[in-house]
Image (cartoon, rainbow, N blue to C red; front, side, top):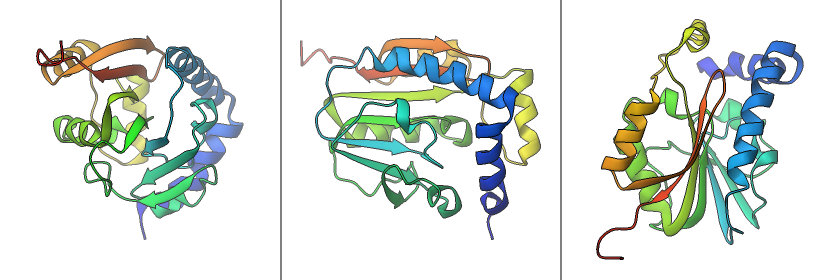
Length: 194
């Protein structure tokens, strides 16, 4: 029995029915929608990592095929908006350069090795592709999330900007809401490509 077995229904209920959560999530969705507007038309398959219940999928670009990846079946079984794949985001069962668009909304704060995760995203992302993700800065609201009983990893904007630049990612857009920061990135052009 996993922690998510009881958390999944509570999580879904809170996101949909409690005014405070709905308000916070609406701000995040608005910011994600701003970033999505910057995307060119995206052909091919959309990969959503840490998809959970899929509540955020409605604001992401429509793709001919959408794959929802999550490690926990209890969350993923509530996601009916996509083809579902049980896997870890740090060890994806996909070939290199399989996707034009990858998203990870509300996932990074659960991962303790951002370098390994971003390398795996880079591996499955096509050279001209885009990666949309969120991060959680350390603030009072995010520290309250620790009551769920899980370890969270918080990332400041300067730390992430430095990490992204040092690891070959270019920031296309960035937004901020109370709980999360929203990022749209792509691979930075290497000197060989220029």
